[in-house]
Length: 361
Image (cartoon, rainbow, N blue to C red; front, side):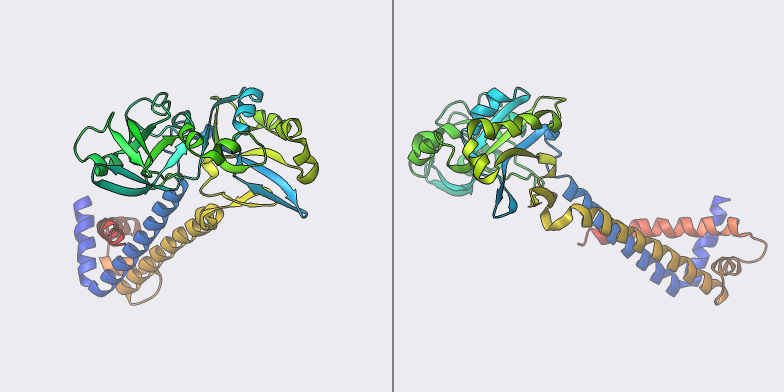
């Protein structure tokens, strides 16, 4: 019976070449577009999900009131690290970081200029990027050390083993390679090619050393990882007590308070309005997941309807689509007998064309 279905279906497609080709191409194009939109939506929503424990990772930020407007800032004081460790026991790891700008790296006659970060000792506990060489708890302990990504290590050392070798940074100091990271994927919010201990920055920069002793210099980032099972609601009261206890004058002047922004929202909810995260990367948070996903589904539905109507008209010369199917397949066959074979063959052809079409974009 199935063989008969497909033989009849193929005969109908061949007899109506123009309509068949037009509608197969149209539906295949629609499916390819829907597939591309779906993949794009999935990619945008997948940022940082590859990291183990990403749901417990946060960035520390300030919220304050200035000229009647509630503002937020992600640059905070270095002193926050110590007080958060002592005042909020639900925090498992905490790490400071600079803003990950470019620096010059030199090995022999090889010189590269790439972006990298200077980060706290527990950075690779907070962000569990996969290490190919070294241990997360030890690679950033030594002040004059550096952790390279796999591609950076290859650029500097070629096929040689980079572990224990020296890299000169900014033509100033030699740093020993203590670890190799797997290259970061494109859907990582943080992008860097190497990591250097934050203690190196404090030791070699007088202004950073000074910043580590005052609440008035807000120039750095702070990241935390909460203990497993600990919710943000549980630590929020402790966060609200930090400023009144350690910087009460800020509370009086600008009503300053500490809050944390979850890693899972950095990409889609990074814009703030009146102190609340409302959107992010190209306002994707709602438009991408709702509006465009709906449009893709609706487009595919309309194309399917168009195909069914067109082939029906081809079989009968107009009228109801089901009558068209009946006329196109001859007497003695009911609609349930006829439509499955034609639809199955049609969608089989479309499913072959659709991935090929989407790969062209």
